[in-house]
Image (cartoon, rainbow, N blue to C red; front, side, top):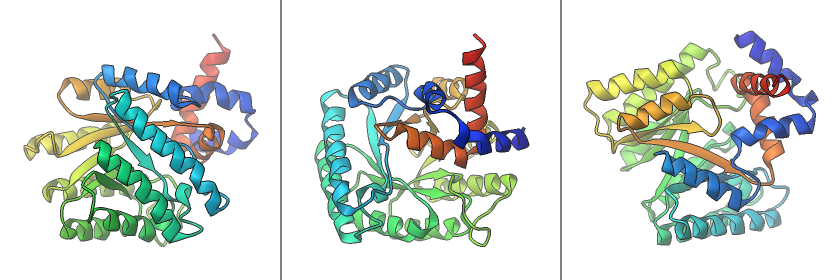
Amino acid sequence: MKWFNNILSKMVPHMPRFAVGIVAKKYIAGVTLDETVVAIKKLNEDGFLTTTDILGENIPDIEASQKPVNAYLELLDTIKECNLNSGISVKLSQLGLTHDIEMAWDNFQKIINKAKNLNIFVRIDMEDSPWTDHTLGFYRRARTEYQNIGTVIQAYLFRSNIDIKEMIMDGKTNLRICKGIYKEPKDISMHDRSEISNNFFNLVKLCLDNHAFVGIATHDLELIERCKIYIYEQNITKDKYEFQALLGVPVRNTLKRLVSEGHQVRYYVPFGEDWYAYSMRRLKENPDIAGYVFKDLFNIFHK
């Protein structure tokens, strides 16, 4: 199946925009904030936590960062006003990191200041490897003043074990562990799927064993079960971790079962005008999602 999904992912650039749009509705909460509020309320009613992500990254210049900053400030107000059980996720390149680090910090500080006042959690998302040190630097800088902050570690990077150990030594930390989606060179990253899965599991164990809160972010059903068994074996309390998934990826039955068993489960809920670019990137970068999408398209056109 892997080879088939790889072929499908190479076909993505040739998909018509309308076809991407039809299926993207499943993986994106909407274009507008109002549409997203409706989606989050439904997820909350079903027992899921959420993290809301405004789509967009790698802005063309630092001036363009003001639009996403204002959008995030509005999102924070909306989460509070609508009583949504949601945090937010922020990509630093969207705030100008690739153009001016200090101005990006100023933009980020506006967001986390408001989030702190409203008691809303902020996750600093991880991007490709040229920005890993800067992203972790922002996280270390932020958590000296803010409690409601976390970041992301990608399991396929060789450095991740050391990064986690260093952050644990720094003190209380909150990490989301994912496999990683960017194409990285072999000298800094693992490419074998079983090796990545094993490292993912070991990184989750490292966090749990050292009392670091961990978001277990995977759609791999075997890996979810493996982590769950370890949690039970070690009598880890349910306030020390949560399972996480991207909106639309077809593991909902497993996630519902986790909720019924008393585990915290969080959906990442992306929305915004950049839905097409987001969808194309994710389809090209992740062959498994390409497989899901083409199955959806097949079902749509054969109803």
